[in-house]
Length: 200
Image 1 (tube, rainbow, N blue to C red):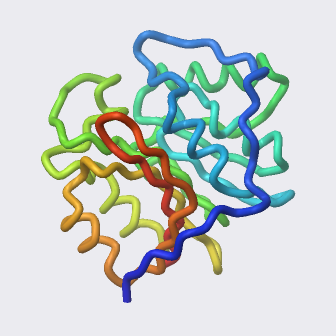
Image 2: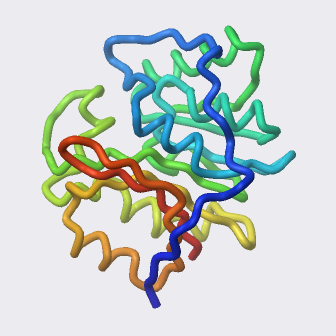
């Protein structure tokens, strides 16, 4: 069964613009989708969190601030280095690894987060991997979902950002069989972003 339940958590994190976030021209910077994601879900003290595609580390830093025990990673080694640097600049700690979805991760988590590359384009290059989701815009979402049972603790959840530019029929098809809740939405000029909580 596949369905959406709208609603925003009353315990959601709040974006902290005072955090020190250095940037790199070859790493995806904090953007509207990052801020939307941060404000869409709650983190409990001691919650084990995995963020895939951490970019600058902005989402993972918020999860640490709210009490999460965080592992985060990116396929881009420059993003890994930048996240480590930004964690240190803010006196925060997370385990930061280079990983292609789950390739560098062996543990299990309560929550897996991914601000997906959701644009339906086939651009090349390390930075382009942050937004290039292929012809249908699904990008690594299938790999994320199929690998989740091996990386989630009982009762665990997946939280992702998706776009109205994705192939919506393909998105619905791949989410068939999951319980899906819409945590937040953001209409933009050329697309609408949504944050989904997916429970296997």
